[in-house]
Amino acid sequence: MESYYLTCRSLTYAQRVSQALTGAGIRNMITRVSPTMSREGCGYAVRISTALLSRAMGVLASAALPPKRVFRVMAGGGFEEVRV
Amino acid sequence: MIYLDSAATTFQKPASVRAAMIKALDTCASPGRGGHRPAIAAAEKLYECRERASRLFDVEDPERVIMTFNATHGLNIAIRSLVSPGDRVVISGYEHNSVTRPLNAVGARIVVADSPVFDRDAAIRAFDSAITPGTGAVVINHVSNVFGFVLPVSEVADMCRSRGVPFIIDASQSAGVLRISARELMADFIAMPGHKGLYGPQGTGILIVKGDHRPLLYGGTGSNSMSREMPDFLPDGLEAGTHNMPGIAGLCEGLAFLERTGIDNIAAHERKLAESLASGLSGIRGVRVFAADDGRDQTGVVSFELDGMASEEAGERLSTMGFAVRAGLHCAPLAHTSVGTARRGTVRASVSAFNTKSEINSFLRAVERISEG
Image (tube, rainbow over all chains, first blue to last red):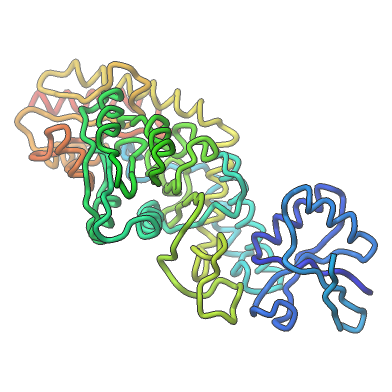
């Protein structure tokens, strides 16, 4: 299933992002990301379903918690960066 | 044994602290080091602890709450971040060696804003004249670990902000005992131990960071692994290596205990005990007690001297009678110098939320017996 990964600079930041989204009723999950996605080695992202991206970005903008980058992750595991 | 050495470490902890530590040993691995269940459990507990501390100390966001090994560790990070060799650093006359030794090691020019004990106005005047142009930083103890003297931290913070001088607050004796708002104080760093007024275990501490910082330890953080540099963001930049998860879980429960009980209630309880202690001691012949005229200027820490007896000897005799107190210089020779007790030191009794009035009465009877010879 496709999903969006909102990458975060740290696990703690990802926890803040996750909490803000949960507070707004947006289901999400913190997940580790591959070094190829994070580019800097170990990293974390908050995963959400594709239908929720726009709402999630609005919530995070209000909370001043922008993700580092946003990726669309395909069912087969491939991914591409998304400009939002 | 009646424990009256909480200024060193609170020995009696809420039962939930012990239970949380045992549970952490069974459930928590290393936070930020894996996607498996034990790593996630650790990450959740660590974040809960940061959040509780943020609420309790009115911190802007939990990323600014850094887990340390103790207050000394936090103070070393703070001092190494702000102070360079030759910098002029103003400190109070009541600082602990955890401040004076790192400053000395860095090669700072230490200026002591000295003032009499329990005289807040004099302390304000001393800082006002000591913080001159060219001052690189200020370090102020919120509460003296020897005398329980509450220093005018808010006033000194205002002074530092208006003069553009970075400052560090040592909250070792005030965290969990007095209200602290990081948002209002706007200190560059506030350091505190986890094992005193926060009722966590030894080996834990918190450092609240406002702005620029420099790592003291370098190593793995579970983030930016490809880089040989430490991450420049918090908390990772100041938390190298594996976290003390059982300790943090215990600290988290200590913070929960404070939230449930209320810092104001604990402060009122401790103040009442300290007033009983001070007034009882002052009625014993041959005892000189250091007590504030106004109870608001002193926490639950009371120092005293016994005529013709070294403080260490008095401490030993009290210990054999079943009372745990601390005697000597309390790692704060500067405070003793400020008050004129550096030659013999003092006996210090310090209370926690778990002490009772009847324990204080027993202690007073013991001191009376010693003073009678």
